[in-house]
Length: 219
Image (cartoon, rainbow, N blue to C red):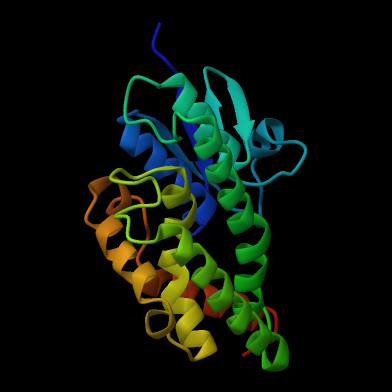
């Protein structure tokens, strides 16, 4: 019996991008099911009745939600290919800590840039740069956060970078000027097929966010 692997996703979701990259790294074939979040499908509501959000990973009919949990699941199920989390328990805990930091701190800060204007937007810009500088320290002189190979933190953060152009254009600032090591890391990641094929065009993301801002009366 063939294995069923399905991903319910929305193309600009940086959280969905994580799952796409993880599956590409593992070489796992899957069915991609694009979702309209303004008109949620019965399948999405059935597969994620709690949060009703994407991404949702469906493996042999069983749904898993929350991108960081999905990636860990994928790493455990397809453990014979391209490990994503460190084998050392302490390093694994540290990787989980920084992914949690990205999800709970950086994500909230980035939203202030494109979901607001004026003072709140300025605060968001400062917070994003400060958080990226902290993450930059974790990267240090390594090629990837995972060392020589793409790992959990890399996969968690890289999706945000397809939104960097939007943050910079809407907020009128430069991430590269403030965080050159992060941007050098982005360029290394984009050389990997698993990453470049999983991330959307930053200009397309920008036009999507302009529509969001217009709907909110911000532009």
